[in-house]
Image 1 (cartoon, one colour):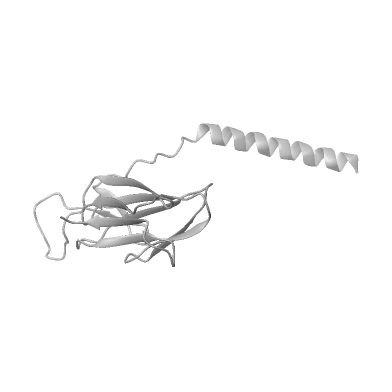
Image 2: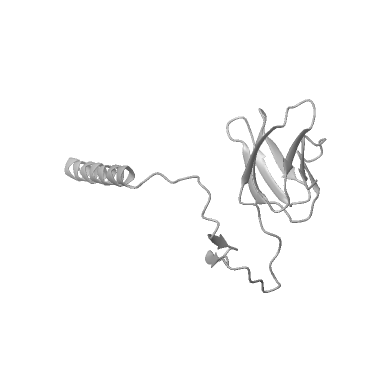
Length: 150
């Protein structure tokens, strides 16, 4: 019985050592944006390369801004905060709260959960049409407004 336990312990230590070496060797993932010339599209993960020439096939939409906007919203703020962005721009919105709450961005169909240990993070490409999107907990007044356009 003790021999089997000893073998199991040795195997577990070997696996721990191997996983530690792998974790040390593999580089840490970068949070940088992907190259604007090569990006993953849709849910299939297929890669699409943007055309470098001035040709247009007539189905292209307005160019998406290459600058990512980062914003943080506190759900306990006394006044609603305003987040300014351009249509088609990538927005990474972090929503913080000290109590657990569902968070939604009305008009974009996005929901998340935030509490004092883990904020809700929304990574979204804003629609190309100028608009206003309210950030709120369901049934409460808006705590922030995302404004796109002029």
